[in-house]
Amino acid sequence: MLRRVVTRLPRLAKRAASTTHYFQKPRENDPRWAEIVSDEDVWTRYEDEVDVAIVGGGPAGLSAAIRLRQLANEAGLDAEEFRVCVIEKAANIGDHILSGACLQTTALDELIPDWKERGAPLHTPVKEDEFHIMLNDQKSIRAPFLGNSTWDWMTKNWPMNNHGNYIVRLGNVVAWLGEIAEELGVEVYPGFAATEILYNDDGSVAGVATHDSGIAKDGSPTDSFERGMGFRAKCTIFSEGCHGSLGKQLYQNPEFKLRENCEPQTYATGIKELWKIPAEKHRDGLVLHTVGWPMDKKTYAGSFVYHLTDWGAEEAETLVALGYVVSLDYENPYISPPSEFQRWKHHPLIAEMLEGGERLSYGARALNEGGFQAIPKLTFPGGVLTGCDAGLLNVPKVKGTHNAMKSGMLAAESIFSALQDETREWKHESLDVPEYETALKNSWIYKELKDVRNVRPSFHNPLGFYGGLAYTGFFVCMLKGTFGIDLEKWTLSHGGADHEKMKPAKDFQKIEYPKPDGKLSFDLLSSVALSGTNHNGDQPAHLTLKDDDLRRNLELFDGPEARFCPAGVYEYVTDEESGKKELVINAQNCVHCKTCDIKCPSQNIDWQCPEGGGGPAYGGM
Image 1 (spheres, helix red, strand yellow):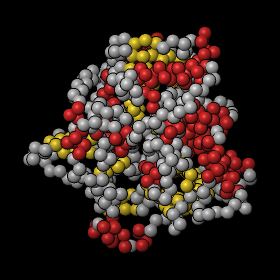
Image 2: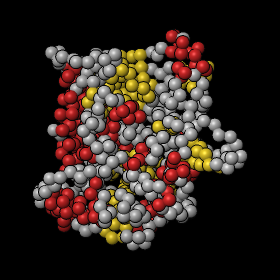
Image 3: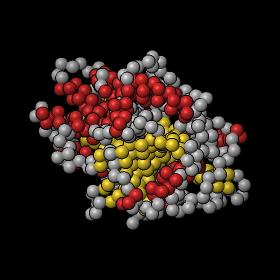
Image 4: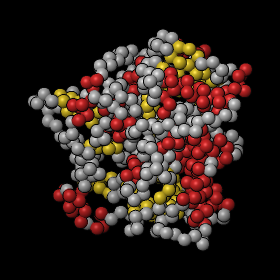
């Protein structure tokens, strides 16, 4: 039974400070902490030393861990002689993983060539491929060529061609990778949230520390307070996923200058549900994508519908994984991505497919969309960025797992080689491996992202997504994909950060979304209840405000955080005494998508990791 974690406050008698988190309210300045901070035995954290620490137990982190131990085993180094640890904030490996997912197995084939024989949970090969343009709430047209075997010669190299891929529940795949890693000698620590970067005296990264525990909701210490654990490493791999909280700190480090020569990252929010549908409506192996309605032509958005069979159940279950992705560079503050998703399901193309079905789970996450233009400097003294921490998603493919895995493998190979080189001169206390960035730029990841670099920014044109489709169809699909002709000697720009794109509410009319019918569409309360989300209630809200008194979001944009959050974390309620609207943060609802940190037009919301083990429990989403 999933615990209902959604909270809703009907009124606000007195507004309390929203932010009590020690990242915004330093404990060294708080008299409640004076005794603890001054007690060296309590305040000094226990630290362990490893060869390589990996933050994040997703596809990139686990691929790096597996590759490191493969190389160590080949060199005759056992798990004590060459220690690799993975630190993962979810209670179980795979619990926080959410993706479509249609998996391209290129990296998996390289990492574990015998994955089929070893029981990898890839059960549904793609059998059908469809792409539809939704014209309005009733009509759609299917794009020609794609998915028609007669035209395979034309479409086999198009980015959206899925021949040879597998429809998977990525959380299950990641859990399996975790088992493989442990078999090889990797130390895997789920339930530990890395929240702090440790530095050496020379400014190089020394490792990470996990979340302190025993801090009450008001920010005061409890009797059970305990410092988090430190992991010091010769090199630290950051693979937290999209917009990782430690990755964000690294980007903000003025000494590393990781974004000095690239554009700001741009993002989208993806919202997903898993349904069980009647067998007669199920088309095992179907991959279907749509663009167009319900979004306006200026807003980049689209959907995915994947039919798969869950052979892991007692009886094979006919499932549909479906979701809606809205880019976060939209202008209209009244757009609500979760409401658009619920409305989209009422289109006949989707509604007929789901009729008689049962919704099993719900979740959301942010996605990188900056691609080639936003690839940062990937290395710095003491560490590297991999996967979505580095922003390696391929937007037109709607895939990033294969790139994430490959980046982790390349990082592992570069780090292991450097650590085994006894003649290498270290310029810092921790290892700096610029070879990793060179290796990635010489790999198929870099070529793949460069080939499609103009797809996403091409949609910024007077014709909106129609112009973007025409550009992509001509330059990327037909010329480059079909005939091997590359005329794109230019690189288009994304035009700035997403939070800068929102325009004042006075320039738009409010969007009246249809009420959920409880059959196809649902409210946020019932949706979040299906995410398995749970947090310790007596801890500071991890959704922090840099300035509790800033009212710019409400006054200029009419409180957009109450609409763009897919979990009902933010709401504005009216104070009965003052009559003013005040922001209330329901942190327990958070599904860790990080949309708020990205899209907040005032950049006042700062997402931090809560205590380890909290958050969603997707269980194979």
